[in-house]
Image (cartoon, rainbow, N blue to C red; front, top):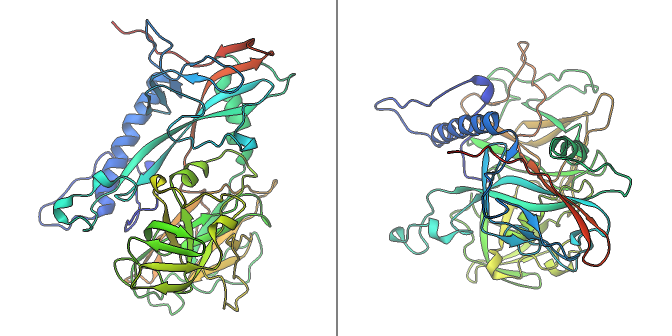
Length: 462
């Protein structure tokens, strides 16, 4: 999540059961957040063990949570109620395919249309960071109408999706649907990308060789930044090597500037940032987003496109305006982003350069080209490496990210290492997506269709 965190330290492999405060000690955000993560991990793991990967409490007088019905070729209804997906509680007030709250579907978009042949209806669940800009009621107005924000929220997002199936494809049942969905959707992104991080001047190593990195806090080739940072390396354009791109931020991508209006290349902002460190300036790379683009970015399509990145050409400090290198309406991926105020548009700053670099790593409006098997510099001695697959090419999903804390005191990054001190390869830290099958629908012309309920009900309780 793109929060203003010092670091994210929860790891279920450590088997911690609680974070215990001690008297007279400093309280850190990472420790408080770890306690929340420990509790959520325990509760959701217990729920999954008891109920399975996906289950709903049935109702005597209705379909129960997320029941699919009333298919007419254009849409279908989703019944109100609850469902647990990998232990995560999802709640629905009742909706249809087009009006689901976090779907942001476009009736004119070909990929959003319901298939004419058989298809699987399923639920995609993930969690999104919500700040005081997206949810104004979080802010305490007693601190000032435009005063400082305090905390953020993690919100459960569920999206009703469809997966087209061939006429000859087997019809899944309640027992096999979860495995079928896992293989067809989640399996499309395997093998996942692997990344390692280090400081220093790595040797010109081959794909299987270990880099030579700094392990001493006094080494001149270690982290040379003036402040502690939480670097975020995130996949922008999904795909394999040669197609996928990435971007990075030294602030975990938390520098977000709310947008008032967009007029061509000119963007009026609520603020230019708290200070020079957490603001925007000429030459910065920014991304224009809103609720719709964030939610649509969770697509399960491997070849799904992505919005462009912009370079700030001019800053009007008096008018709280920035001028971009291109008008957002020219972006073929999404021409409406930033144009609808109720979607809470904002600019997110990234810290990789786009021009004026002579190191061969400069990118374009789609980010930096992802290259495997070589160490790629971020800044101040911090370097990352994407590792090639052994038997199959690796797949990078839009939004995949890795977090790399860098510390001044040690002159190094906090990254797991082997006993020999070499950085380990790690799968993305997020975004974790969870899936649950809902129904199988086979249109047969007119109002005739076949519907198979694929949800798993919980046992009735007395």
